[in-house]
Structures are given as structure tokens and as C-alpha cells.
Length: 384
Image 1 (cartoon, one colour):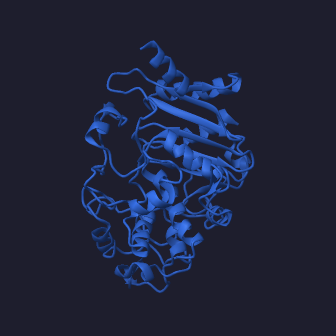
Image 2 (cartoon, rainbow, N blue to C red; image 1 turned 30 degrees about the horizontal axis):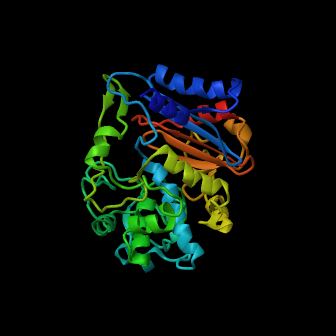
């Protein structure tokens, strides 16, 4: 038993050449627990092909679980970069043009309505694939009675597209930025082009080549009981840990594979996705994604806040790529991060960034209900 414990400790407490810098990262992880922002959490820093830091800080609180090598986290919006990369593999294969009209692949979305001061009207602009990739389609998130996307409402993507077709766009496609369900529709586009389920195509194009065998859209009953990280909640009168709090069932028999919010993964699995990106599209010497596609993904499509009305105020200094933040003004960010870092986060406070200049990535995972861009900002400050 002691040998097993020690082996797990080695796996989850790699702090090579532990010094003041690494202690700052561990202090950041402990502070999140002490400040009741998260429960147990795990962080990784990887540079030049080596893991510099990998440590799980466990809370030890009643209702929480210790994080181990196989702990599963819902990715929520960290699913979006995976879907974007999947679309770009089709671009690399010449099977899709980023300027394709969306209706070429999803005819259900023809003749959309746009919202205007006098009410809804027939949209003038044609919605293109690049608009979905960059959150410039006009689609938002529809909370409340619509609650899209949700596996509690849909069990396949065909019905989901039909439901989306009834909703108006917030503006003419291509004219503004609005964070929304776009990558969910891109999963539907992939199904239309390939004739495969979106999950099957992810496995073929990304998960199998990257050896991401724990990344999927569901958890088994055994995984749910043993490996699915509980949610930490700290909201008004409600404080503690719960097994759920989501509009997603993560049931294996549900085939509504939502590319914007639906995936679950482990830190080890998602780190392989990050390794591919930091290596310019290669993993273990094999080309998975072209450098041209990475360049397109990280190009500026929308200004950051305040120049972009619907931009995220917490991301000062960043512009928007294809569902990615990209750092344009390091001074405005104030963390010492390199210009050109890019990444994103998920609603349960999973976060990652890629640093092409320093050949580095950072990855953080926990499961806490109240999302905060301050979490990755504090992480980056500790690292840099």
C-alpha cells in the first residue's frame, strides 16, 4: 500500500527543481481552497517537452474528493477549442472552406431572422463557417425556457439544429462578437460533412492520434461514483459539495454531442491536446493539425473589451481568435505573460493557455460552480 501511495504522490507532485517560483504556484492552489473559491484542484506547467510542475492540491473537506490520475472533469467551454481544431482538420483536408455558407451544410438554418429595434426581420448577411468559429454569427446562449444546448432537452444533434432554427440572431452575421452556442452547431456541420457522428469524428481525427482515451461526452455509472469530481458551490446560503448542478446528464445513451460544452476529460488527456498545440500541430512526431490552421485560429477576428461591445471585460489586453483569447497587450494583462499566448476556460473553472514564444503551456482543472477569469490570471502570474 505504501508503494502505491508513493507512486501516486510522484505522479501528482512533480515540482522539478522546486524553488520559489514553483512554491508560488502551489501557494496559488492552496489559496483557492482557503478563499473558498474551489475545492481540490490540479495544475500543470509544461515547457520544451518536459513537465515542470504537476501538483494536485486536495482540500480534505467533507464531500470533496482527492484528485488522482484518472479524475474526470467536465470541460464545458474548454470543449470549444477541441471542436475548432476538429473543423480545422477538415479545412486541412480540403473538405470545408471557412467562407462556406452555413446553410450549405445545415440547410435547416436557411432564412434566419435577425433582431432589430422594430422587431425581427429577414437577415441580409449570409452566415459563414468562419462566423461560427469566431462567435460572429449572431447566435447567443439561450437561457431559460429554451435552455440550449442541453442534454436534458435533446438526445441528438438533428433535433437541436431544428430548435436553433426557430431562434433569432442578435445581429447581422459577421458584424459583431457575441459568445454563444456556435461550436455546438459546428459539431452538426462535421456530422453533415463526414456522415459520422461528431464523437466518432473526434475520436478518429483527434482523440485516437493524441491518445486521449478518457475524453468523451459521457461518464459511466462507475466513473460517476468514483472518478467524477464533485462541484464546489459557494453562493449565498449554499456552500459545499454536490455531485451535480448541471444542465447536462453526461449519460452514455445520449447522442447530443455538443461541441461547445459537452466533453469530459482528465488533466492527462487534455495536456496531450495542449502538447499538440504548443508543438505547432504535431504530437509525438505526427502531424495532427497544420501550422496554417493554428495561425488562422489565433488571428484577430474581434477586438477585446472595451472596443468590442460584447467582449469580456475581465480579459483586458486580449483579442478574440476562433473561440480563443489571444494576448495582444501584455501590459494591460499585468501577469508577465508572453505576447501571443492563447487559450480559453470552462464554466467549472478549467483553464489552459499556450505560449508559442516560450514553448510552454499551463493547464488547470477543478470543478467549482462560479466561473472566474481571475483564476487563470492568478495562475499565469504565479508561473511567469
